Image (tube, rainbow, N blue to C red):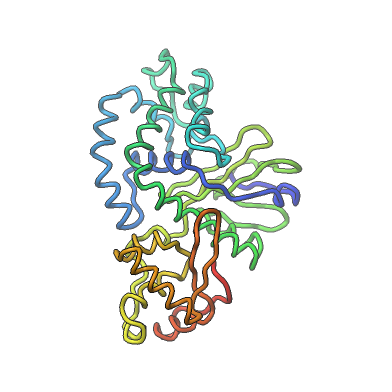
Length: 330
């Protein structure tokens, strides 16, 4: 892929979106490659993998289709339509409606076309059925937590954008990705011709919680970059409190303050700490009154994040290893 050239109009119209379909596709990739980036994801993978394997064993043609679509260097285009923030079912329809000829062409480009799929009809609907199954069995039961992690990541990125511009917001989203300046965004380290995005070209950035990402487009006006969420947001074991801070604030309040290095909702904090909703709300109330954190609404979710005073307190307790990052939630 190499890099994209994005003019100022296209960049100004860029936005972040939440996509249940992208999250589900990333989950399929995690199940297929058996990859997990942190303990919580390893637990999810261990729980879901046996059922996924059994399902694929019962649908051998679907198994052939997935193996061919998830090529080592390229994912078949029909599997990754650019998300646009619609519902899971609405976004899935573009995959379901993909003609067989297009699916076969995409498979050849991604890796190979298995002989078993050369004459099979309904490849788009078959793919959609698998995604529906993974959504229902492995993603939707946990979707509210995942959605809040994604929303928190968007808030992190938009804050970085406001403070440091596109170089700060986009660099490091994916391995090899960096803002090169002069309208150039390096997507990865592959040697491919640049892609031009100009004028009314729509560009969306889509965070997902599994450690998988991709780029996709449809024509000149729909372009997407799917990337994994910021690491700590997805890790249930992150944010151990230093003993000096524990002695000052108590173990629970210290743990919550450390976790708020990046914005989180009360639901995320409940999941990360194992506390009840009421207990988390009580700790947040005290930290708010002390001026160590602030709250901000994004969409339907209220997120909490540390301010400079909280940063300084945590930094002092860790011997200065964690520096202040300035006012405001991320």
